[in-house]
Amino acid sequence: MTTDQITYLVFGIVLVLALIFDLGLLSKKNQKVTIRQALYQTFFWVGLALAFFVFMWIEKGERLALEYLSGYLMEWSLSIDNIFVFILIFSAFSVKEKYYGRVLLIGILMAIVFRIIFITVGVALVEKFHWILYIFGVFLVYTGYKMFTANDDEEFDPHESKVYRFLKKIMPLVSHDGNGRFRYLENGKPVYTTLFVVVIMLSAIDLVFALDSIPAVMGISRDKLVIYTSNIFAVLGLRSLFFLLRGAVSKFDYLQQGIAIVLVFIGVKMLAEHWINEWIAKEIQVFISLGMIMVCIAGSIFYSIFMQKKGLPKDLNDGSV
Image (tube, rainbow, N blue to C red; front, side, top):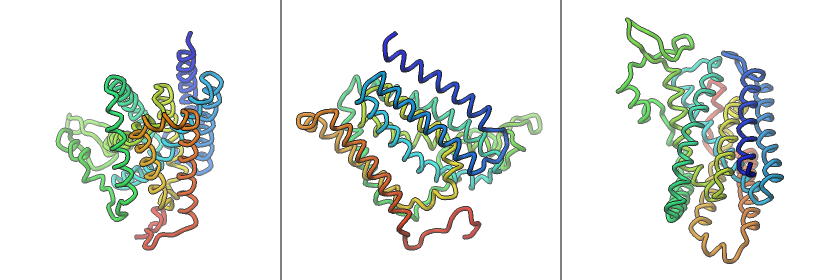
């Protein structure tokens, strides 16, 4: 077997065993997840991702391992933006807390399938039409600029989203959770509950975020293994991260600006790749990218903690308006 095949095999085995362990031992159906449980689960997924980083270093070498770590950190930080939108979706459809875990799990597993398809198509297009990378670069610079200058008052409304409107047109929806069911028969006809809607919306929202994150990780590495593994590990840790940060995510006010700077940096790097390669070795580029990601993300989080925006909305969990 080649080193690539061995690495994919190990990744697949670890993934299956980790999901079994997470579902069988760390999670229980329709049970509220405490902060302590969420912390253990987060340590578990982050530890697993870092263990795979060590394995990558041994099997594939220093450069690809650092590219994987850079991609993982990039995806992990973007996940915090996902969490804020997830909170809005759960709140808009009045999902009971005991159903959070199951709904998140199904939504995230669906998102992983869609991301694999999305990555496969994206990589194939780049291999055939290299100039697409320049489009990705322009897109990342534009997205980063829009994210940096975004108005905080523009809040996402799940009931006004195109996905929800589309579901309302094509499917019979009911405005309750059906006691934990996704679908049931009403007058002999199938109807779909709010839990079903939320699962679909979580998957759809993750795909929207993938439009930023996948080109960003391709700006860090062109290696398929790095792109697949960094994305999937970050998405798998999203559920535990949701339970850990849902009460504090609204306090990371400047994280969006930190992510925006990283996206612009990676976009410019993609656009100027030809000239950068002539002056800076690939190995050094990897260290620069990793350092930039860590400084921007950590800096924006710490800045959010020590600074307070004027007119900051109160915590989502305190029940105040």
